[in-house]
Amino acid sequence: MPPPAAPVIACFAHERGDARVMKRVAALQAQGWTVRGYMFHRLRDRQDVPPFWENVELGITENRRYLKRVLVFMGSLRLLWQHRRKLAEADAFYVVNTDNALLALAARWMARHHRPRLAPLMLELADVQPAMLGAGLRSRLMRRMERFVLRRTALLVTTSPGFVREYFIPIQQFTGPVFLLENRVYPSTGLSAPEAAEAPVRGGRPWVIGLFGAFRCIKSIALMRSLAERFPEQLHFYLRGYPSGTDAPGIAALLPGLPNLEWAGAYHYPGDLPDIYGRIDLNWTLDFSDTGTNSSWLLPNRIYEGGLFACPALADASTETGRWVSTHQTGWTIEAPIEASLIHFFSHLTSADWAEKKAASALLPRSLTCGEEDYRELSATIRRLVG
Image 1 (tube, rainbow, N blue to C red):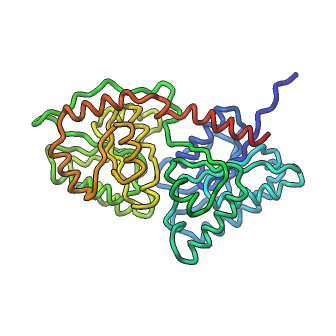
Image 2: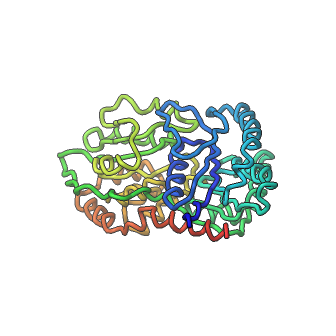
Image 3: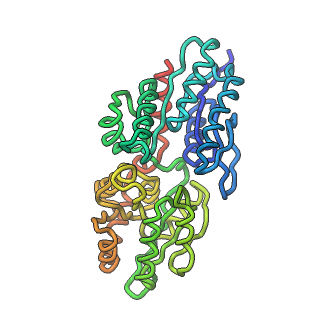
């Protein structure tokens, strides 16, 4: 007898080139799913990575051009109607973000005549945008729309317990099943910490502080620049990635002009991680882009990457990230006022202090920093819901 066909999962996403989207697709493929993508694409000033899965491009959007995005979104319904027979073959729907979930629900309705039993919908929400938390009419309507989707969701996937505790339960009154898919390193096979570097000694090389990924927090970059100016001989900031979000132009303007604030461009994930973390002494995980809400609730990729590569973190003590770092003793938590506390920290940091935190980071089990087991559990959960 021929082997059973691989189960099919239809993935809806806002951006096929998004690093998180590509990671999710690769992980589902590795767990034996046939992934069919129904995704938008966004033109950016970086190299386009073509999809490595069967993909229906729903349209091209542009950052901050909301009217065009709405028109593209509406036009995608025609494409989904044309693919309704293919959509009917999906055993499950995996959707990133609420607006795409509305499309997925419409697509599932279109396919209903070709598949009587509705395939379950998994909704991933990894951020809570400021617009979802306002008191105005627009925010209330957006929350209502999200609750409409959540009531039709078989599984909510999110990346931090802070989102569940602070938003989904108290604000959205969500009581359904939740899968916590933290931003651990994936794939991690063959990745390990480089040979331990020697700590700087007074009068020797500077402390090297790294920030890797998308630069969305203009306050962080401004703070780095201020510290670089204050400690020209003692601190060197090493950045890899690219400015992103609505503050991208302002962030880009802060990057040049200082020899100890180095922006070395984009990098390849995950292959370049051992090299870039091997170049730094301290891992900057501070984020003030949505203080008190999203930035305070999230758990970023950086804490897991720094943990895997034994690089102690700097974290805001008042955040979920700070609680993670404090619990695992893998760095320092900084109290408000942040800038004054960082000045004091760097003025008193010793090689012995650093070596102690680095040793604690090196002892973290891989299960806390690597994502393979998480994706096996996610796949098994989805299969149980498919039945």
